[in-house]
Length: 415
Image (cartoon, rainbow, N blue to C red; front, side, top):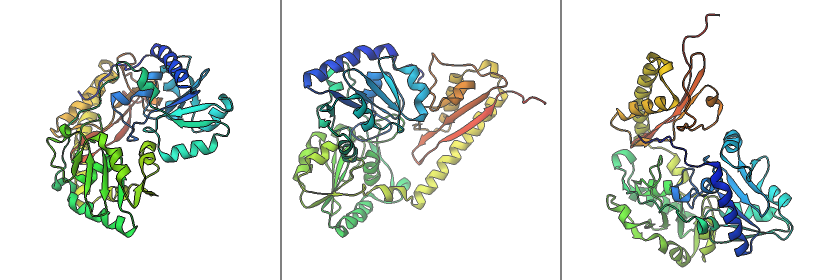
């Protein structure tokens, strides 16, 4: 099974960790620390070692952030997670409706004038920090090493998943052609290089995939694309033993030095790049979107054919699942039973690489919990006369799927 059903956090874990973080803040002479869900790659899915928000607060949603002050700690969540956050965090944490309440407004209300609010520059973008700093009248916003990492004694190691080639028969365009196309755009704009920090952009450009993160086939890495089409990839060499990468390879710890050495006008995306990378750049920064974003979004005929094949394959598995569900006595089924069965039908294609996200298998009232994740503790039986929500998808080498169905359990009433 790709999906597991264990609870990864409990509310009672949060308070002692919060106390330890506040003690560390006092040692560092700061009055606040921001803990985002994001990692250095701004991904929705993060490695266990980057689950700082969940480790500290107990909240496991895919979006949100926390602000720790000496006397109050706000956990900011959007409308998808307002039921979930109340179930997962202890009373020492205060849920905050976001974006209705902005980060700056909340800090201005709860932090005294002159407060020093710290952040990890690897986990925030220049756009985020620029916006926050502009709105923080009378409060200082300053970078610091990550204070959660400093107290997380059993923090998991960094991912070591292996990368692999994404064949030309699936990509439809060689990496060399992609790099030449983007390099031409750099030259037209007078840019000498582009800094790439989004793993999906790097994997698209180099025609590789990775296995660092569950559910998303990416290689956690950084790259620099030069205006002649040359690329330097900053990644652990042991991850690349099964990938034929057409790029110079350097270790991740060499990335900032390479950024500092760049000359001329360098393209940098202020909405995706870590602030730490922007701070390291000595050359002229040309703020512009990641050059891979639009070309990557415009699918070629080969990619479109792959997407159709993946969806067709997945649709057959889904129809077989729905037929099985219709023929099975609901009294014998739970939410976990259904999630396991659905994954089994996808596995039977012999093409499934992973599920594309945790299957949302919600019976009755659980179907109203946005992004509900069933666990052994919450597992509910299906019941006649109730609705059942299943939202799921599969990862295949040629495409990714996502399908939602709401199913009436049992025979409908006659009147």
